[in-house]
Image (cartoon, rainbow, N blue to C red; front, top):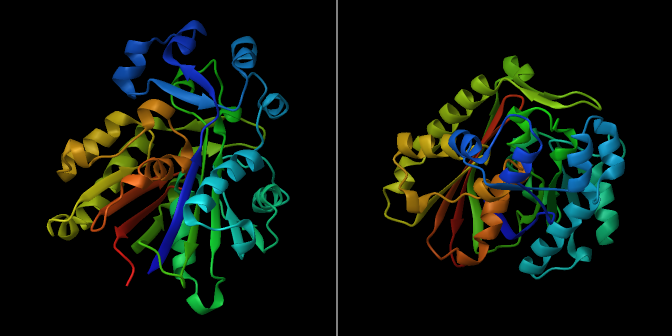
Length: 329
């Protein structure tokens, strides 16, 4: 059992609305976007004038234009997580970071986040694109409890709009920026705990989603969406016995496409009121998507709740987690 002491999120203030995208004159409008992906708005670390003027024609320049560094957004989410956990930076004994679009190849971005927070502890990165939050949880869950520090900070700063071509409507309408962080422990009990974590990879299909060095995001959208729907549906069906216990059950999926998420709910028999999402307000924020949904609902979690988190991402990777909320004994 892996305890979740606190979780936090951060979204930058600059909003890319559907009207903004329509004004870029890339062959899209609000009706087209809502029909295909169900997204009304997304946030970006880039200045809106920069996107309007350049459409991000050179992804390398986006790093210079960016209003935030990954270290800053990751640290902002981490401060919320630490505050909710009732902990200080000095309590953290290990920092693990990861992202769909790391700002640095070297050093580990975990070190840059730790520096922002004043944490002195071992730091390393584990990147698994959109499944990174789940892979972090699964990795820590696999570690020998007696070999881990009391508290571990995992961070997912995902500012992928720097790698989006804003002349390409197929990707421009999808992505937004966001960051999440969580405090985990295999030793110190908390009211929320991951009862189950599983992961896997369909490695033969790794080329279906990629971001080349200093290049743009690209994907085989049809193949990736099909994989996502199938895998999330299968993961949810595996939780059927949990749903039948009568406990309050919630589903959080990969926040890429609201239509795809609704298809998953229909196939797995998840009622509307049990489906938590924020893709309509923030777009696809990569590995910060599902975890930011959980963070937004953190104060609502009640004793007896069960939350299934089903993630998919480049690789093609998948993770599913089962979070339980109980009063610690």
